[in-house]
Every structure is written in structure tokens, then in C-alpha cells.
Length: 228
Image 1 (cartoon, rainbow, N blue to C red):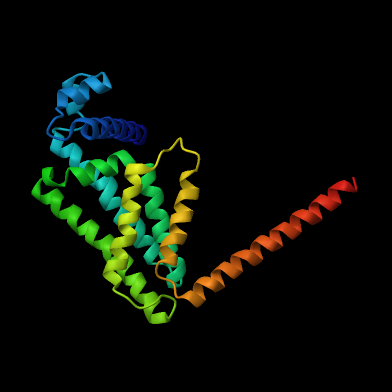
Image 2: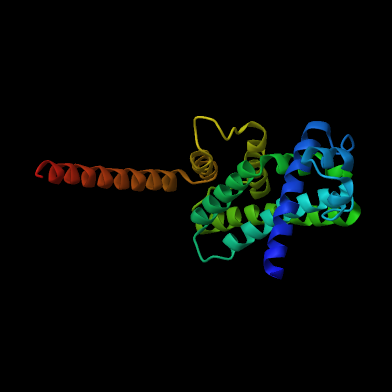
């Protein structure tokens, strides 16, 4: 019973966060009150206090949902025993997907950093720095292994992170291309920006071979189907 109650409360908190993020995005943090959020949810202000005691607490929870979660997600991928090419692709893909799936909350956190209380601002800064260091370290690992060309790893990391972040502003969930396809295309672009030419050619060749093999399999299946 307690588990079900906790799950219901967590779901309600998430609903409050989504409504608050929407209003923060439209009106700004300073232009939104708890009364506005309660009206948006069609609940009383005392009912809202059951989940959050202040706007600052709501914003702190959004930071936890966005920045802190992103750091944990990328740290898990970084802990895997994979080569730099795979690792850079995977952390870029996951970050892109996360940003597109949480675009409103992501934009709110980015635009409201100055409104964060000191402790939350510190957590947000630590999380952002951790994400940056993950990208930079995997790029440096790729440079050391010979997969990536030499260059300033910090500039490359910031460029890829910036590409991921910008998706929050332009991606449309009801657009002609799915979030997964967008994430894959941009992940490949991120890799192309740091790969040595010979490795880029090798990867393209491998992809071409896989496509050819799949086309051959499809042809065989079609031939078999015609026999029945």
C-alpha cells in the first residue's frame, strides 16, 4: 500500500513539474507564481503545497530531473568498456534524445540558472561540468588511440554539447523526422567532426557493407516468397 501511495505521489509531483515548466517557459520564473501553477493544474494552493513548498523547490527539482539525471546517464555510458568511437556516439545519442524528450524542462533550467538558490546552482554547475568532462575525456581518449584527429578537445566537446542543447529550441515532436532519427543523424555528424579521415571512410564502408548484406537478404526472402 505504501509503495502504491509513493508511486502516486511521484506521478503527481511529475505532473506538477510539467505544468510548472510550461508556465516558466511561457512567463519566465519570476513571472510565474504558485497560484498560477495551482490554477494550471486546477487544484488549490494548499494542495500544491503537499508536493512543493515553493517555486524555488520546483526549480530545484527540475534541475535534478534535467542536469543531475543527464550527468548520471552519461556517467553510466562512460563506465562501459567500449572504444572511443562507440562511446562518443552513445553519449551524444543519449544526450540528444534526452534533450528532445525533455525540451521544455531543459530550456527552463538553461534560462533560469540565475534564479537557482545557491545550493541548487552548485549542483547544476557540478552536473554540467561532469557532462563536459565526459565529452572531453572521450575525445582525448580517441585522439590518444588514433581514432580522432588532434585538436583542442575542450572546443570539440563544447561544440558537440552545444549541438545537443540547441535541439531543445528547434526540434518538433510532431515533425517529419522522429527523435531517434534526428539523434542518430546528429550523432554521426558529431563523430564526423572529430574522426580521422581514414576511420571515417572505414566506418562508411562498414555501413555500406551492412546495407548491401541486408538488401541481399531481402532479395532472397522475396525469391522464397514467390515460390509459395
